Each structure stands twice: as structure tokens, then as C-alpha cells.
Image (cartoon, rainbow, N blue to C red):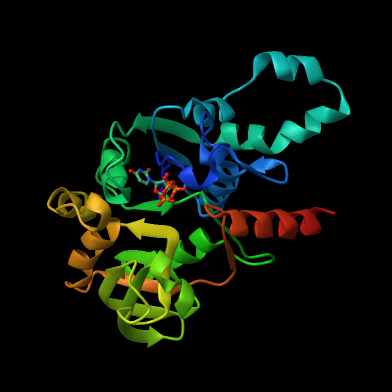
Length: 273
Ligand code: UTP
């Protein structure tokens, strides 16, 4: 059973400026709940109750959100509004939250390595909270991935078919098909052009990683954009047959982009009303 889930949340969120000037992107709400809370709920659904967050400057609201707000709770005690805090209280009661800061934003791979101090020597989930995933009526995406991990005991990355004209935004895989939903990854390319992309199978923001990844990242030189890319480290492990790509069941909203954010807002509002 995987106990820990890492949330790299140190990025600047420049696509949402000025909203993210003084507020973390992960605190942007989809209807009435911040992105990070959806992510933590998904981790908990997969049994991962040790929540490890990699934050940075200007991200204090994340830790405050997963703490009591004494004055507010005192103020609304006994009123109908108290129920609106039930879900978040439930999460706070069930989980252990730990935080560390990424001092320099050197990329997602570097953010994951920064999380080593919190994760230690055990397999762990990774959720990028700006990819909001749902699977109404079925297992959450992280739950589905935890099941794959239990069977195969190696790294698992969530993949999705995307239109070729959008492929340049993603890490893209090639692999040997194990079954309809599962590939043993043989190649990975970060943000390829449509001509260079080996397939239309894109990596999205859900991973299960084994602790071996930390040493691999340590030895991974900066790649695209001068950043230490998680994809480059995973490719190293994939070459040894240690990474599976799992085509998840459900729907993903790219809430790191304005278009995806608005789509998610509309869909969640429909579901709520
Ligand atoms: P993004 O590529 O979406 O970057 O990072 P960003 O800074 O969050 O957003 P934009 O592009 O400027 O609008 C993917 C994930 O990796 C984390 C981000 O917080 C996000 O969850 N990340 C990225 C880090 O934690 N540290 C980094 O150095 C880079």
C-alpha cells in the first residue's frame, strides 16, 4: 500500500497572472473548492494519507488551507454554514501534511527531488493539482494507478490520447502494448513537435514513482528550457523497462490553462447544480 503522495506546487503559474501574483495557482477554485483540495481528496481515495507538499515563496496559503481557521470556525459554529467546512475538516483529520520549499524553480524533476526529504525511501504518488481528474461513479485516477502499481511494482505514469495539434504541450511516450490500457514505455519525448512525436499518448499530471527515481534525477542534467525534467529521469528508468504508461479511465481538465480552467468550472458547476 502506498502511503505518501507528493504535490509539486512551487511553480509560478504565470499563465494565470495577475491572479497568481500573490496567490498560489493551486488555490484557484473550481466552483467553491481550490484545486489542491481536489488533488488531496484524490490521494486520500487511493489510501495515500501522508501528503507531502513542495511549495515555494508566496505559497503559504496552501499550508493555511490545511489547518484550522480558529476565528472563522468559531464565528460560524452552529450555523448552516458550518457544513461547508465539513469536507476540508475531514481531510485535515485523516491526513498528515508535511511541507518543504523549493528554493529555486529548476523544473518538475528538481521539485520531485526536493520532495525526497519528505518521501524518504518508499514508493509514492505524485499529483500535479492543476490537472484535475475525475471518474464519476468509478475509482479515482490515483486509485486506478495504485492498483497497477500493486500488480507490477514499478513506476506508473498516467497517459491520455491528445490531438496531434496539442502534442507540443506534453511529454509523449512510445511503448509496447501490454493490454488496451497499459504500455511498457520504451521512449519519452518532452514537448515534441507533431513531426517528432512518437505517438499521441501524452503524460498527464499523475505518477507513481519508486524511490530509485531520486538518484536518477540527481544524475539528470538540465534539459528543455534549462530545467531538470522529470521526463528525462523517467526515460532513463524506462530504458531499463521500469516504467508503465497507464491509459486511465475518467476525464482530465488542464486547469493550468485558461481554457481548461473554464471548461472544468462549467462542468463542475453543472455537476453541482
Ligand atoms: P507548469 O509547467 O504547469 O508550470 O508546472 P507552472 O509554473 O506551474 O505554470 P505556468 O506554466 O507558469 O503557468 C507543472 C507542475 O510542476 C510544478 C508546478 O507547481 C506544477 O504543479 N513545478 C514546476 C514545481 O513545483 N517546480 C518547478 O520548478 C517547476
